[in-house]
Length: 77
Image 1 (cartoon, rainbow, N blue to C red):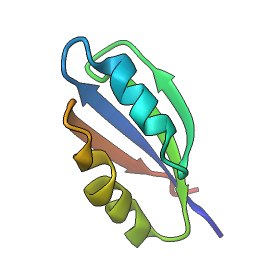
Image 2 (cartoon, rainbow, N blue to C red; image 1 turned 180 degrees about the vertical axis):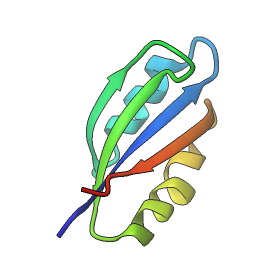
Image 3 (cartoon, one colour; image 1 turned 90 degrees about the vertical axis):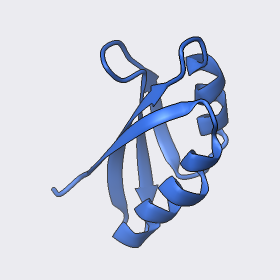
């Protein structure tokens, strides 16, 4: 059974569209929306296990320099 999580992303000013384009290249990203508020982007990811969520954050999202901050919200039901 796949594990889903929502990740809220805060980007550097003026870099939201560039970050969104980079995020679309990540195969685990199933949905992406640009939003208003304290965060600029919300993505939904789908991975095989909870450990894979950490790997996405550490190996893929942290490599995008225009991302300032993320908040991860795993789906529990």
